Amino acid sequence: MRIAFFDSGIGGITVLHQAMRLLPDEDYLFYADTLHVPYGEKRKEEVRKYVFDAAEFIANQDVKALVVACNTATSIAVEDLRQKYPFPILGIEPAVKPAVIESEKRRKKVLVLATKLTLKEEKYHHLVARIDKHDIVDSLPLPGLVQFAEHFEFNEEKVARYLSEQLDSFDTSEYGTVVLGCTHFPYFKDTIKKLFPHDTAVIDGGPGTARNLQRVLEARHLVNQTAQEGTVSFYQSGTKVESEETLRRYRNLLNRLDELQTLA
Image 1 (cartoon, rainbow, N blue to C red):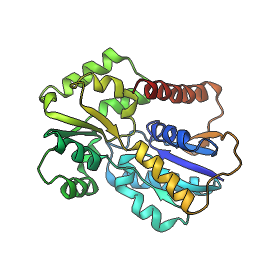
Image 2: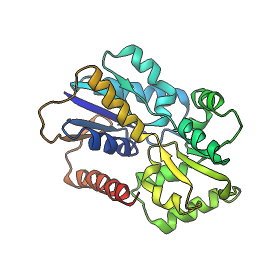
Image 3: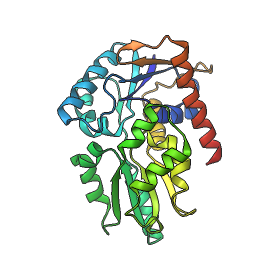
Image 4: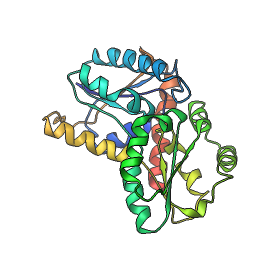
C-alpha cells in the first residue's frame, strides 16, 4: 500500500520530500491537480469540489494514508475528508505556533507568506487568534510565487525582484521569523532568506507534517518493514504520468530540494 500526497500543483512535492527523508522505504503516490492549479485564487466552493474529486480518485489507488500537502486545501476541506474516508488523512497548516514562540523570545515579529485564500480562511484566523497574544503576526499573500513554481521558473534575480516589490512596504528588520504558508514557497527559501536579516528564521510546515505522518503510521502499525527503497508514482488530475520528460521534471524538483536542504 502507498502513502498518497495531494496538492493543486507541484508545491506538495516539498512535503513529499520531507516524508521521503524520514520514511525512505515507503511507496508514494503524488497527485497534482494540474488542470485546476492554482487553488489560492479560486472560490472556496470550487476548490472543495476539486479536492473531493481528487480524494475520490486517490481512495481507489490502494493507499494507507493521505497527506493533503496544500495549505489552501487543508483549510477548506480536510475535516470533511476525514469524515468520509477510513484511512488517516493529514493536513498542513502554516507553522505559526513555533514562529510566535521563537519570535517572542527575541522581541521580534512574525511574517506569514501564503495564498490569498489561505489567509482569508477562518481556520487560519482562528489559528492566529489562539496563538498570537501580543499581536506580532503579519501576513502577505504571494500568488506570484505559485506561478513561478508551476512554470518551473526558479531564476533568482526574477524571483527576488518580485519579492522585493511585494515586501516594499515592510520593514524586514522587524521580523524574527518568516513562515512559508504555502507548500510552493520552500522552492524559493534561499531567495527569501536573502531579503531578511541573516538571523531571521525561515520555516514551513513540511517537516512537522512529515513527522506527524511517521507518528500516525507507527501508531497504526502501518510502517513498511521491508527495508527496501520505496518508489514514487506521479499523477496529474487523475492520469498517471508516463512521459519521461515530465517525470524528469518531477525528479529535478526533488533534487533541487536536496540541494536546498544541504544549503540550509
